[in-house]
Image (cartoon, rainbow, N blue to C red; front, side, top):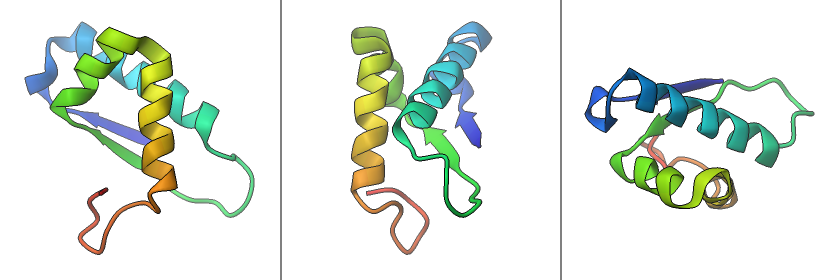
Length: 79
């Protein structure tokens, strides 16, 4: 599991908080069983605002929307 957060999203404290919240949201939303897989989340600018406004619950909702959408498209980007 990897999380990439650009310096554009804030200082190191802010970026690390975003990483922690996204990891917690991801692991609470995804079934840990099954085949071994690697996951990489790339935080976009709007995720900082979602986490600030709605906290962990907002991040969980975003991750669930991502996993329900079927994942990334053929270019490797999520829809």
